[in-house]
Length: 272
Length: 260
Image 1 (spheres, helix red, strand yellow):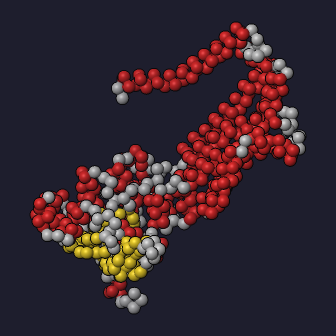
Image 2 (cartoon, one colour):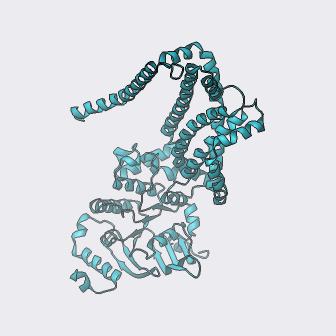
Image 3 (tube, helix red, strand yellow):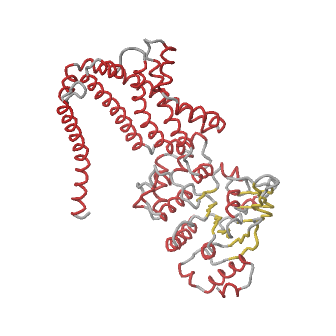
């Protein structure tokens, strides 16, 4: 990185993982969670990680977030180590559970990252309000989270992840606990929000249509050991209308991801 | 809200006040009935007899009440401070928890009766320290156990969030660990407040200075002044109630204030 020119710096990828390995446990009982992961995500790109349980997609996201350390290999976030990126707040993060603080109101929850990093009261109140409006919670700003539905709580978590206008969003199955209808609506909203912010996104999911609908690229993973088996391009552009879900091109990509996941031709999918 | 619901709402609210009052009146009536029919007022004095003692010997009852209440308060203070401090240390260092666990278990099952005579000998018969220490030990256990549990209640997702936000140890403690533990602290404190009063009172039965509610109850009951003994019992109940209510009030104020 040290020798790079200015032009190259401008094109620094949001995420670069080279030869990443992660094993849990001691040598004898070591479990290979991730093996030989090479992945590059451009600035502003939306990439989904998809795969069955145990394929290491959440583990990979935790490595990017510096919540775990790789056993081997290197990870870079905008050319810096994950630790530097975490301390410098390069990324925003949302988990499967909203993880809200129940004694704080919606705006206070959204403003938590700003509060931790010393943003003045007036500014964080203003920004948190704007974010609450952006995720459609303008009428619930002073409510405690336990008065909100699961979908609304998840929207608070997303607004919180966006609070510091990060260049990278890490999302670990943020809609995993939601019902199908809420889920599709949230996907639409996320596509819109991310389009506005221009941030790169790493989105962990196990829903194929969700991955295809949201992503520029779908990274397919398989377990034991966790590795990348295929990458499917889903170039539907930044603007993703709900009607996309009805289009043949969309179904074609869903089938392609499904086949990549199962590693088997179409017939099996059709037989079911 | 429909009219029916509204009526049912006020109905239950009124019932919540009326129900315990009815129970209280019934109990006093039963007491009166028993004392009158037995004809042995020396054993069971009538309610007016107890009331008269309470009013006429008010200064005596009040003096004893202050002593016991003060002992309980000092004990509650010691137990709470020690309980919070040690729970904090045990939550911070696992090893300390493992070291403390058997000791706390032992303290929890120590009968107050067993320690009181020893403390009285240790501190001397004219000292209140033994009684305060007994109340302190009794208060320590629920505070320690509940605070320790509370300090560990922050969920993994919340811990991950604070780590991802690069929050410092102090920030995480003040904004996550402490607010999560507070309700547990108050659960412990509520239990400790009644235990401190009971222990301070019971400790008085086993020697030490000849003052305080427990001593008075034992003395007057033995010497046949049952009405006066019951008057002191009433005072003891009042002390316990005041301790409980004050703790509940503090809990209300603090938990309402929380988003700091």
